Structure formats: C-alpha cells, structure tokens
Length: 365
Image (cartoon, rainbow, N blue to C red):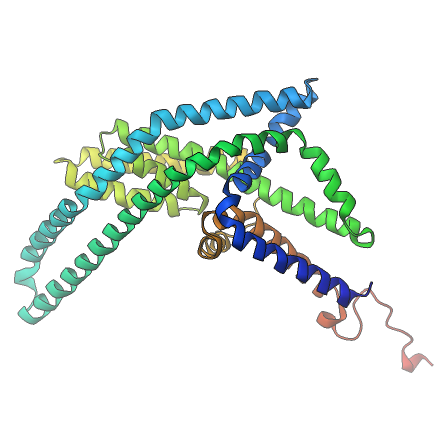
C-alpha cells in the first residue's frame, strides 16, 4: 500500500470516528467516563496483581472501593455544594450593591482631587462596568446551576459507568494487546514509541495533575470553610478544579474569596487569613504535590488544554470535554514527532543533511 493510500485510509477512519462521536454523544457519556476511570485506576489494579491477587479480584476490590468513596462524597458534599451555589446566585445582587456602595465611597474620597468632567466620566465607566459584570456573573451562575441540574439528570446514565469500568479494568491488558495486534507492521515500533509518549503525557496530566487538583480542592474548601467564609466550599472546589492551569485556579480563588471576605467581615484579620490559605496552597502545590505526583511528565501546555476543553465542549458537549485531554495529548505528541522528522529531513537542511556524505571536493580532483 502506498503512502497516499495509507493517508487516505486513516483520514477516512478519523472522519468516521468523529461522525460517530457527534451523532452518539448523547449516549457515550457513561462509556467515556468509564474508560477515563479505568485508565485512572489501572495502576492500582496492576500493583494488586503484582502482589499475587488475581486480576478479577483486584478489579472487584478497586471498583467497589471507588464506588463507595464516590457515593460517600456525593452524599456528604453534593447537598452542601448545591445549597451554597443556590445561595451564591441569590446573593449576587446584594454583593453587587455592596460593591456599588464601596465604589461610591471611593468616588467620594477622590471627588475633591479630580475635576468635575473627569469624575463624571469615571462614574459612568465604573457604573457601566459594574452592570456588565453583574449581568455576566448572573448569567454564569445561572448556567452553572442549569448545568448542575442537567448533570444530575445524567446520573441515571452513570449507573452504567461502574459496569463499564469493571470490565475495562479487568480486560485492560487484553484490550491493549488486541489493539497492538491491529497496528500496521511496518510502522509498529514508531507507533508504539508514540503511544508510550501519549501514555506518559496522559499519566502525568490525568493521574498526576488530577490528583493535585483534587487535593488542592479539598485543602481550599476545608480551609475557607474553617475560616468562616460563606460559599467557602464552592469557591475552594472551583479553585482546586482550575488548578490544572498554573496560578489560574489559585488566582481566581484568591480574588473571589478575598473579595467576598471584604464584604462579609468587619476586620482585616479574616481577610488576611483567607489570603494566607491560598499562599499556603501554592506552596504546597509547588514544593510537595507537583514534584511528587507529576514531576516532569506533563507535555501539555495550559493554553492548549484550555483550547481543547472549549473546542471539545463546543463540538461534542460534555463527552467532548472528557475526550479533549486525550485528543490534545495525541495531537501534541504527533506534532512534536512531525517537527522532529521535519528538522531531520532535507526540507529543513536543504540538499544535504549534516550526517550525509558531502561527496568529493572538486578542488581535490
């Protein structure tokens, strides 16, 4: 088979895959979620298997423990989270009025130092910005509530996920071996090498960075709640989940939490304590969690991850967001491989590459 026919074959296969995902996205959620969970838990099953436990028993133990942990978290956290989100949505108008009052005090302070026309322009600009911000926050909060309700309706589908997770965990090595037997033989070693790079990238991001986000979310949520901040549980979990982007999660959490604390408390001490919680979280992430759990395995740029999540969500909904990180990892490894091949070819060096013989010098003849 010529190279052109191979390219045509794989392009047709890719288009067929994307069409299937597009039309079946409404029913793929439990299967994609089960695959992601199985990938996350596979190392645990491998370790139990190395201890002499059968694969089926190891899979059963890991799946049962995971389900019990998930159910316990849902029973304990979901009602509190939903309640805080609803309270936050209801409190947004009051918070915006409080912000308007603080802005009025600020304008009163600078009124004597600024000429009248400039002060009018400043008031108008601040008023427009505040209205726009309030409208955007209200729409965002409403969207989050609607998304949470929609996700709650999808919990009935997630009954299938534990079954999918169990069978994928039990047969993971067999599935990998079967897929390996389908690979084209001439490019077998190259594909295996690229697949290993993709696996290292996903392992670093999903297993490593995912664990970091989970630990930070719990740390921020518990710390803010103990500090007495309203909506501390919600803000802490949001800051933790966004921590896959360096400094973004902690930055957003710091701004929102300190802003709410400024309106909630009458003294500066709680505000300083809440700020110190995020500084402690950054120290914990940079010096303990990331070096131990992630290391240097991540090869995904944060901007590329954000683009992948937004593009996947826009094209295929929540299923697309679940598939975004693996697809981003595959594309990233493919692009790096293509660039390495290009920079070792004649297209980069010209007629002769440095490691090729230059031929006899005409002046020596």
